[in-house]
Length: 146
Image (cartoon, rainbow, N blue to C red; front, side, top):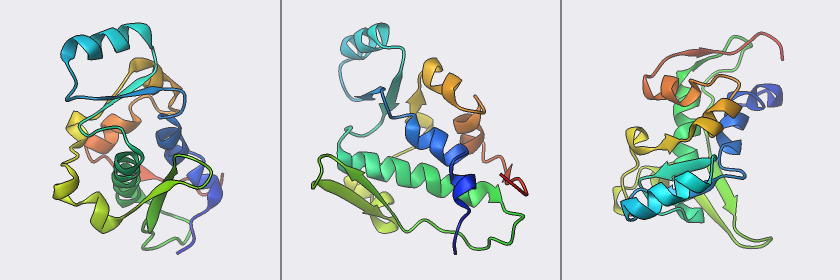
């Protein structure tokens, strides 16, 4: 199914751009290091997996997949699903994630409860509670026009 590009520029864009100009931290690092990094950077994201391109693609896939599942469409879109996510490391090097990769426990469990966005990142969302609403499985209703 085709999805209106204007709709993608709303919540999806906020979520993907949350990683832009932010440091990404692995929750498994030493607490002193994590606290020091957070002290020196207002924009950070903490993940339960190592912040590699492979894991970024999995995290982004799971978040967008959840957002799509929670979104009520009113413009005729039906059964919109995410095919894959590509995260580029370089101009020619990238990681691509498909559904089976995103949900692969052997690549590390990704729990939304363990993903943390700093206040500065959340302040940049059009809806500051966006990720919390996804975690609470609240419904989103697409507008009729964008």
